[in-house]
Length: 115
Image (cartoon, rainbow, N blue to C red):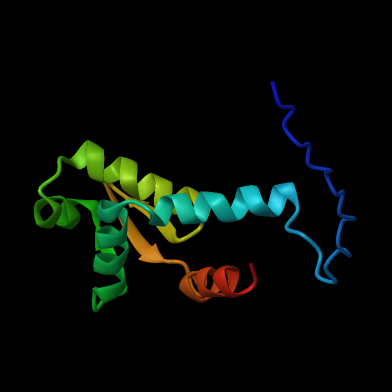
């Protein structure tokens, strides 16, 4: 029986750390919340519908039919966008009105470029 040759392993030293600081855990968590909110097609559509409204705001009652979703589902998606800091919610009587948070989309673009 012939013995198989053994390969010697070479250990490489780690490279120098980058000069830019890594994304800390809290910042990554905050950014992930925004990206997760944007990762849903219905939420993207809602955001674009609110942004496109001439008055700058949309009532939840006007957002259900175009999506073909029920009011509770639309309200859930809108809550996620509010929690992510993308939309502002104002309650008027029985209805809630949503508007884009000023600068929110610019902040998202900045998050991507600064990764």
